[in-house]
Amino acid sequence: MSSSTDARTSARSWRPLSTKSRILGAAGAAALVVVAFSGYAVGLKHEQRTNVLTGDFYVGAQQATGDVDGWVYGIVDSVSWVDPEGSFHQSGWPTCLDTVGTTVRATFGEVPATGPQGSSWRQVVWVDCRGAISR
Image (tube, rainbow, N blue to C red):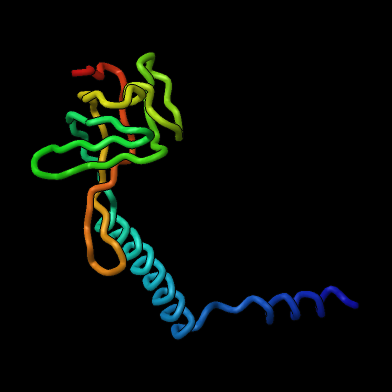
């Protein structure tokens, strides 16, 4: 193959994009930006924020019930918690809620939840035993 043939083949394979190709490419890039931004905006709208509250919990066997500002909060079996020394536990029963029959003032985090049929509640997602007080 001669060098002149190589030059002609290279010249034919490298052509500037047509106006139509440029417009389609720009439209595709713009569509991707719009989709990405829309997904981000929807995620922000549905972001759950944890509300931090302090309340008195009546302690039962692996369950505790508290009433704060007209809402009743229940904790059953297992929840994320911080022990009195500040160590985080992903699950289990908080040591500050160990003594059945007592009332304990503790800080906790809750998030609003909605069930499939529209019922709503506030789910306790963590308990902080640092500074918890038995009453």
